[in-house]
Length: 330
Ligand SMILES: Cc1cc2nc3c(=O)[nH]c(=O)nc-3n(C[C@H](O)[C@H](O)[C@H](O)COP(=O)(O)O)c2cc1C
Image 1 (cartoon, rainbow, N blue to C red):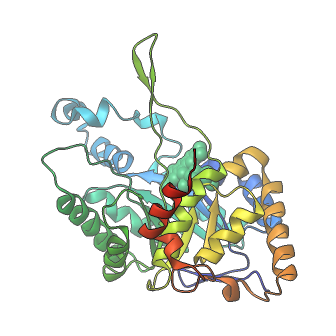
Image 2 (cartoon, rainbow, N blue to C red; image 1 turned 30 degrees about the horizontal axis):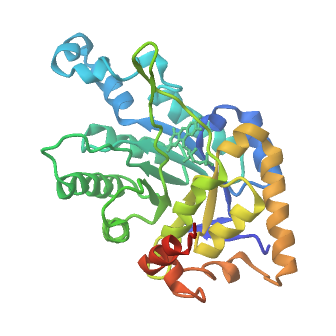
């Protein structure tokens, strides 16, 4: 019982969530992850572009789109390249709900207001316990300022929240100018939680073929530090459920996310590398540490090192930046 946590108003038996990934496509794997102790499962995303492609196909307009919106058929994957079409995705929610007893969180991925948001209703009807909205967006238009970008994103959040009665958490980028303010705005728009952070897949250059190549690298623990800092800063004053995502590989990583203030911690890379054994090892490491440090619940340890409670709060702030730079001696 001591590992139980509340996240988005859901009661999770452990704070470890399988983050959005292809794991949800394999029912047997999901059952094994559940047996290993996962507290919930997030499905991979259904994308704005994918939903809109289907909508357009339904109205037999697909040919016309190539001319009016080249990005819809040019840069983005073809309709058949997506893992699950929207109707199959909805069916997969229902299958997972039938097969699992842990909460199933569906994921929508988009950044512009539009008809794709209605899909939230179908996901709720199929039994999703919550919805994770991934606001993956890159502000590449020099004419669009940060206020415009953020007001679009916040409008999407309020639309999704209005469309569905299930709790909505928002997975955000670490690259907002004022992340703490943006997270407060999410709360004001009715979101119940936020996931820190999206991990940006950065294309590399091939200097022989002179090409830009997309690539997917799994994470390592060094990516966790950015998450720890912002969880620590936000957790003292946020009313949202906070989830860490990115760079959790060892029991120590998991423990740190909770000490920083996370209600739940998502893992993907380590599960893709090691399967359900990763979940067992993370949770048993957490339990051992709690026993050794005489914590009787996850709630008791949550936030013990956040900005409000840690013994040296300047370690999270600018003062520490000065100190660290000046500590290097040549
Ligand atoms: C193969 C793969 C597929 C992913 N698909 C999604 C997705 O559909 N939606 C999403 O929000 N995140 C997706 N992610 C990102 C993960 O949910 C997670 O945020 C990221 O991998 C960082 O966590 P990690 O360090 O534990 O891997 C994917 C990651 C991987 C590796």
